[in-house]
Each structure stands twice: as structure tokens, then as C-alpha cells.
Image (cartoon, rainbow, N blue to C red; front, side, top):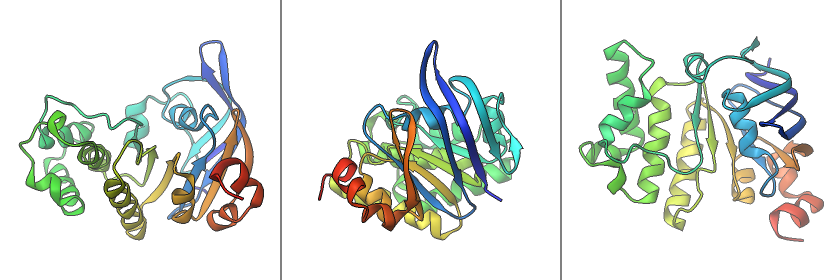
Length: 237
């Protein structure tokens, strides 16, 4: 059974419909990439899963349970983590305080402490800079902090929206290495990425969206080698 499944989802902002019968699924332990041109509906797909925008129809199930109408905190509580686009951190809070905010739904202090230790093991730089203000960190470090914050609830699955956006090549490589490392630990991952070829290289499967609709789907390397996908979305022939 799929861990996350969307069936014929329609969604949008106010009167503007963005998604038209979008369907996708993510199985346990998979890395799934969602790619496509700007305006394809990739980030909107994540936002409807998390309950941030207008739901117009279709089914969204997590672990076999319908989560349509759930609040974002309820969805987090079920084990679905989310890192929004744009390296959103609390600028005037320290690294440690940012991470504690990621565990705001957790009341067990030992679980919070254990999660903090886990994040510092995964991102040693955060452990070294616990007292540094989030707003004074580099873009790459802020992305690590945003990812670490989402991991504070020890989710069963995490959704990453444009994790490499605007980062230097060194940090892009580091972010993708962390994603691979998390996947090897058994974390289920879905990511939206403009760096489509890099995303497909590390993904078990992928979906291509265009104008809010499903266009292609298949194995990561299958899509990498698909001539139409190469020409239209990967910039090559």
C-alpha cells in the first residue's frame, strides 16, 4: 500500500484552479521526484497535501487514511514532514530555537532531545552553531536548518520543495548527499526540484507535471533517458 496517494486532485487559489486531476503516489522507502516547468503546479501539489490551499476535489490519503480537511499541525502529527521553498527560518531565533520550533507538537522532552541529537548528527554544522541566529547563516546553512527543523518530529515521510534553489554548487551537492543519506536510513522522500536531472538521478520514480496536469511518470532513470522529457524539461537532446 502506498504511504501517500493523491487521486484526481483539483485545487487552486481562490477562484483560480491550478491542479487538474493530478494523481501520484509514494511508496514506503521511496524517493520520488516531481519535476516540470515553472507554473506546472509542483509546489501547489505540496501545499494541497499540507492543507494550505483550496481543495476542489479528489482524494488524499496518508497511510491509507483520508487527510483532506486536516489542519497542517494534524498532518505533521501523523508523520508527514514538509520543508517549504525559500529556506524559511526564524531569523531572530538561534539555531537551537529554530529546531525547537520544529518540535512544537511534541510534548515529550526526551523525544525532543533525542531528535535534536539526531539532527546534530546529520548536520554537524548546526550542532557547532546552536547559539547563532538563523538570519546570520549562509543560504546553504539555512537550508540545512530548515531541513533539520522538519526532521524534529522524526517524520515517516518528508516533502522537500526546491531544496537546492539558490544555493552555491557546493551546498547543492551537500543537500543532495543529505537526501541520499536520509533515504538510506529508510526515510520516505518526495521532492520538487528545478534541478530536474539531479533529482531524477537520486529518485526511484518521478512525475512530470505541466500546466497542473500529469504529463509523464516512470522510474527516475527511465525519465532521464526519455527523449521527450530530455528535450522538454532537461535541456538536452
